[in-house]
Structures are given as structure tokens and as C-alpha cells.
Length: 247
Image 1 (cartoon, rainbow, N blue to C red):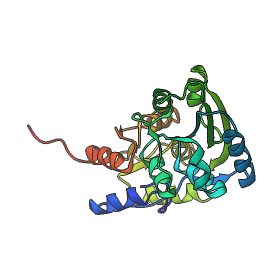
Image 2: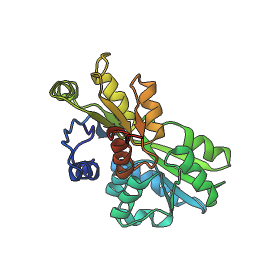
Image 3: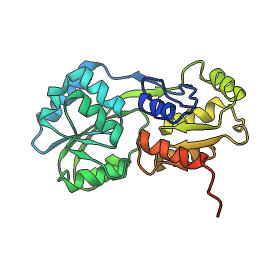
């Protein structure tokens, strides 16, 4: 089971199909913009008016798409741009403005460390983020003297029919569920309505942060990707499903 839409998880779905898997897509997350494009452009203009160095920090491909849709790629030309991981970096590359920094450890702490290593201490940083995003990145950057502007530009919600679609898929039989964010983990737990997953269903997460959030939501976690990417998630999933060789 893939818990994002076919469009959002195309790379993951295609890789699973190529390995012979049957994939059922049950989206557990939907994105709702909460900042008007003019609000995004206004905050970005303020950041661009600040003294250099100026940074934009992206922790999701969704944030990249919303910013580029509101302000255009050229608006990022006056900033150094940081991406939390491969999916976010790919969204920036697709927009025509590749990242200057990609975190080696694909979480907020890793992104902060990568930015600080490139001179972001005492810089002006814009962080267009999801509602409810953790403060880890902000605290690390501000602790090093950076001035950080957090702009909440979207929220993640669970689609209305998600619990029914989840129950139908589980009833039909599922070997494993892939989780690609803390939101998908929390929404899976919510859609289960307090019931445990069927025995034998594996839960595999795209990274350690997602695994921690899944565990905090009361879900079992059987594996997580060492690299937060579709390739890493598939590798972790295959490792779970492949029997250990006999001695």
C-alpha cells in the first residue's frame, strides 16, 4: 500500500511495479494551501530586501511547488537555497532552480547542519513550511545567530474517504504499508480508528524521522529507509519482505 496519491508517489509506485509488486494506492494525505500567493510574494520580497547572506530552506516538495507557483523560479535567484532531501531537491531541479545545499541527513537537524556549514550563521533565512512543522530547524539556526522567518503556507489533511478506502484495502489483503511523512503516519493511525493493523502487515517508513513519528502515533515500525528517497524506501521494503538466506 502506498499512502500518497499516484501523482505524488509516481517514483515509488513505478519502482514497486518494476519489481513485480501489486500496488494499491490509498492516499492518506491531501495538501491545503493556507497562504495566498500574494502573501508568499510579500514575505519573499522582505527576505530579498535583507542584507546578504539570504537563504530559503525547503523541507518538502510541496513547499517548493507552492512557492514557485506563487512567485516563480526567478524570485529565488537572490537566495541561497537548501533542500532537506532528494525529493525536495528534485522538485527544485524541476522548477529550474537547483539547490545550493542538500542535507546529508535528511531531516531538519541535518538541514540546519548543512546550512550552517555553508555559512548560514547570522544569515537571514526564510522557511516556508507546513502548519504544525516542528521547530527543530528554526531553533538550530537561531541558536547560531540566524534570523529566521517562518511562513506557514499549507496544511496536510486526511481525505474524507480515507478510512473507508483503508479498510477496504486491508480487507482485500495487504503485505506492507509505506509511510512517507509524519502526516501519513498520523493519518494512518487516525484512519484505523484505534484498531490495530492486521497481523503480518509490515509498516516501512521513508526515514528515521517518519519512523519516530509513526511509533509515537502507536504504529508498529518494521523498517525505515537509510536514505529518505523512493529508492531508499523500496530497498528497506525489499529487505523486510525477502527471507533471510539459510545458513
